Image 1: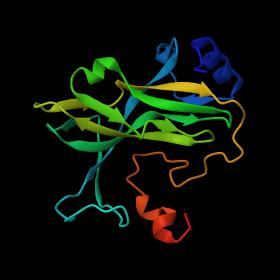
Image 2 (image 1 turned 90 degrees about the horizontal axis):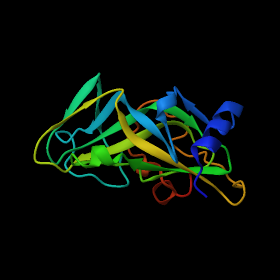
Image 3 (image 1 turned 180 degrees about the vertical axis):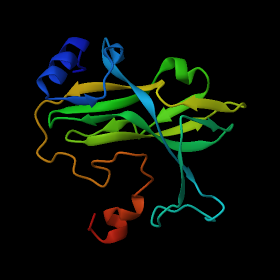
Image 4 (image 1 turned 90 degrees about the vertical axis):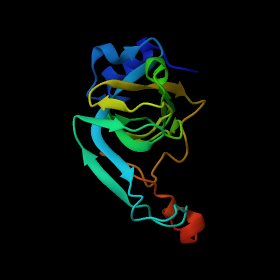
Length: 182
């Protein structure tokens, strides 16, 4: 079941769900808009010959009020909002239609597990033939919250828990690579 604005407001007011900072304008009929933060990561391709799932990726860190994403390019960004999900709520990260219509694809693997706490790292891809200038503080994506049939027995406690900036891939820490030690 997707949660309505009324339910989201009540959960935020009670402290059961946290989205901070939160503008009243951000709460939509069935979602909460999130704004672009000011921290970005770009793959440092001059130092890497190939990307693999079992080796650490080198990123160049950028901070600023704006960034220009060249055509057909990729970067990681973060939301300005820090969220905390209870153990019975999950969220989908969706791009805003107005943003997608300029050719900016927004993803984060599309899913936020129950029990997650932190800022959300966004994967941004410019599918356009022109550069796109992005500005921190602009609404960039939306979170759609869903009630689970029951609280999870194992809330999220993974390698991205508590992140406060854009965080690069940690696939090299997956159990397939580490022999079961994540």
